[in-house]
Image 1 (tube, one colour):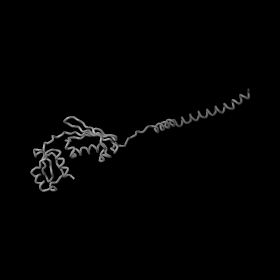
Image 2 (cartoon, rainbow, N blue to C red):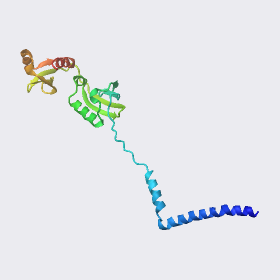
Image 3 (cartoon, helix red, strand yellow):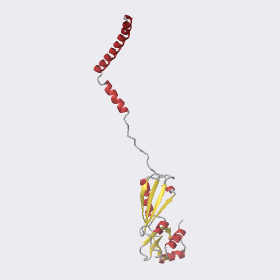
Image 4 (cartoon, rainbow, N blue to C red):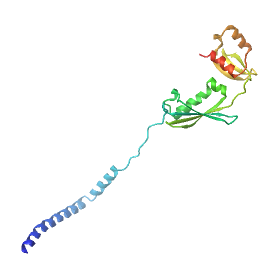
Length: 205
């Protein structure tokens, strides 16, 4: 029995001394370095704080962007929806540059859109996956008649009253035949928009 007590004391005493040493060391650190563990904790917390992520990528048009075109007749309210390949000239544009391009187009549309009576063009929605553009048309009456005349050396299209300019062109009169120039001086009559379209196309390079 004494042997067992001796063995117990042999193991218990060193263990108690070990615990006492640890406790003394903690008291020592707490006395001389009171903020040691607090600062360490704050540093750890600051290291794991999430940082805000800024998305610097900008949405632009690519060749894979879907292009939806709404053609709206202002007289009847009819809307024709077309899905066409994205024009190459739009590739790489963002929303701002596309809006600027559409605004410039409105001031100098194609003859086809002039024929249809284009009065406005609007960007309805924009993303890298899909672009939606609305064209508003005010169709003109057919067979109303036009006059081709010369102003400042260029051909202009006048309405039937010969006073209202319907369309200005970049076709110079000096490049035309003498007989045609004489007709233009008096005013060359064009029956309808189809005939006008054909005439201008034949002299536009």
